[in-house]
Image 1 (tube, rainbow, N blue to C red):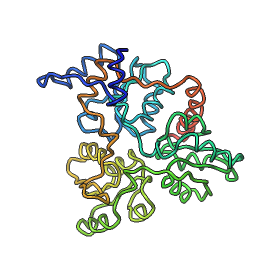
Image 2 (image 1 turned 135 degrees about the vertical axis):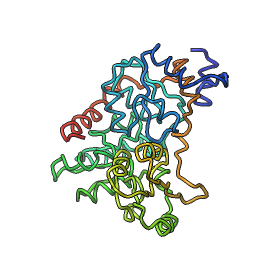
Image 3 (image 1 turned 180 degrees about the vertical axis):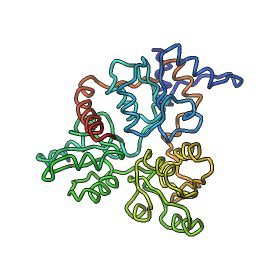
Image 4 (image 1 turned 135 degrees about the horizontal axis):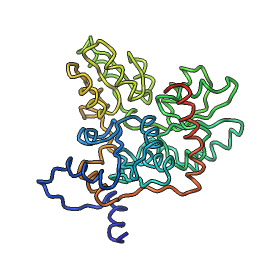
Length: 332
């Protein structure tokens, strides 16, 4: 790789290049996908244009399942870094690209592996379950990985006397502990997007929209979850808006999911829950680093590529595979 290009990727997260403004990026991306036998996997929190060009849109569980079974030679992951790492762990012989390698995760950053290793040493008889929103190194220190879709079921699938460490998300961990009645040892991490919803603003919003259902992701704080009519994973929230007869929903998760909710329910109204700042809705700055232009350059140039050391792949694959196996058994 050209040293200047590598330096630019390290500095900016992507290699910048002038794009003809008249270019039909949707058509060009479709053409490149065929040429390179590439598949685009996108998370629900991506911008609408990326969701619309993706071959598969989903939450962390669905994206992991798709990455494990795809026949494509190239996986273009429109999401954040830990998701692309997970795809590489599950498909080590495939090329995994990420439009912007600076698309990180505040939750993953809240749990440095070297500190978690010391934390884990304090509880030698505990099994370690980590939420998928963490680094490959952290997954390598785990016994089972989970997502918000299957966290409760995975804990319930274990013997009741099994001692468990749950990390890195304390809010999801507290929710799982409450739902299962288990005493979990929690790592003190959190997602900045789900932590800053304003209870006061949501209360006022609910007063202005008395018929609206308030739905929330379990990464939200308990004070917000207590207000919710429904708590679920990103996919769970989407399904709820389809099956519930209500015509208005206040949505407490990253606002990118509203694009799919509106597509699935064109006659319903979706209101993003307000955060505790001046913004109207709650966007993840990391998820929104990816753009259609970066996606095009990424697939065109085969950069930036996400790699994971072989020994980490070997260690991290086992807990991820265990999650996929348990999910398959439970029909998730």
